[in-house]
Figure (cartoon, rainbow, N blue to C red):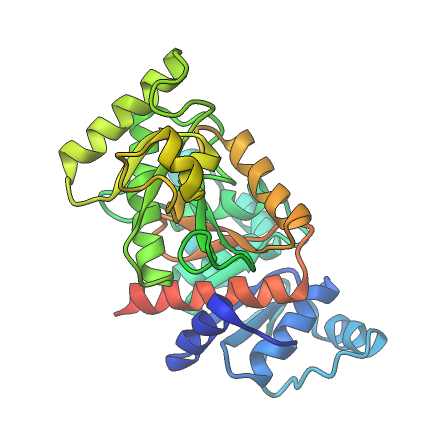
Length: 339
C-alpha cells in the first residue's frame, strides 16, 4: 500500500507522536488490513475491539499477516475495564433515565465501548463507519464525548485530493458539511465555515480560500437560499474580517480561474477556492461521491470537527487505504488536542 501527496504528509505527521486509535469494527477485512499497515508503519498504536480468537481466525482466512504483538485487542464482554466503563457511562447518562442494567447492555456495543475508552483516556481517538452507519458511529460520540467548550455545532468535512494540481491547494480541498447537518441554519453554516477553516489549516497547513457554493454566482439568480448565503458571508466577515471567504459562487466559478474571470472578476476567492461549503448535506454528500467515483479523487472522511476528542466516520464504501488515511487524520487531531 503506497501513500503519496497529502496523505503521505499527514501519515508522517501522525508518526511524529503516535496516538492510540480504537477500531471497533474488527469484523471487517478492510479494518484488519488497515490495522496491519498502521502497526507495521508505526502510524498509530491500534486497539481492535472484538473477540481475540475470532480476529485471529479472520486474519488467517484472509491472509492478513497482522503482528498481534503490535496491537491491543479489547473484548467488551471480557475486558478488565468493563465495570469501569459501565459505571462511568451510567454516571454520564443517568440524568437521561439510564439504569446500570441499561448501561451494561449498551456497553456490549463495540462503538460505545470504544468511545468510552476515548472518554476515559485509555485511547486518543476512534475510527468507525466501515460497517456502521454515520448515525451509529457518531451517536455515542455526541452522547459521551460531546463538543469542545464554546463549540455550538458539530459538523464534518471530506478531505479531497485530485490529480489535477491546478485545483484547490495543489489538488487538495476540503468539502463541508458532507456527513452530519442535513439543513444547516445560517448560524450553523457560520460554525461550519469556522471549523472547516481550522481543519484545513491544521491538515493542509495553508491559508484558506473559502467558497459558499450555490447555483448562483454573485446575484445571477434571486432566492431566499441565496439571500441566506449572503447573510452567512456578512456574519463571518463581521466576526473575523481576516477569513478569506466569498459567495455565493457556483462550483465552476469557485475553482476554475477562467470561469471566475467572467462571473466574479473582483473576487479574491473565485477560481482558487480550496474549501467548498455546501448549502446542505444532500448536495455535499452527492458532490464528494461524484468527485470520488467519476474523478478518481482520494476522499478521506467524513472527518468530524468540533468534538472534544476525535471520533471519525468512514464511508461504508471505503477501502483499506481510506481507513489508514482516516486513522492518520485522527492521530493528527489527537496530537493537537493533547498538546
